[in-house]
Length: 190
Image (cartoon, rainbow, N blue to C red):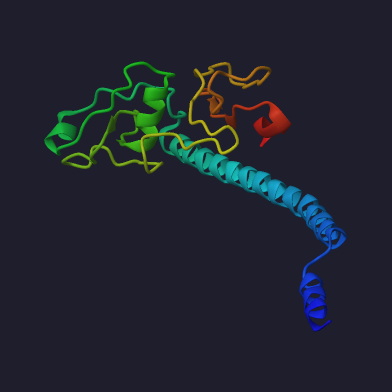
């Protein structure tokens, strides 16, 4: 009799199948509530990062415009004076206006008022303006995870009826408009 009592006590120490199912159902309900909250937080962080990146790039473009009376990329960035190479710098390589090369040179390198660029200020400070961004690359669009700059627009107005291959950014060198190249959820209107 004593043996059968100890066997019964050992059998009663575990959980029943119903109790386990209730716990699993409660966990599933909690997961269904919590997971969407994390997903929307991630989307909110991406949108916030997009707004910050756009603000930084637009500020750099506006400052360049203020100091040069033209938007970056609107003029060629190559050429210049020997003072650049004398000071150990490298001249910009944007030999054609309205190109990504000229745009990046003029934002990332030192420049003169004519838009000519150099990686150094020059021996006599011939390139006194800039740089406006830290690296010679456009930051990634946090929504599309791309830093591709669509072919330049010179129309004065950017429209986004279709997404450009690569889906990073769009820029108009006449108006200075810089937008996200993404038609989803109106990100191009930020």
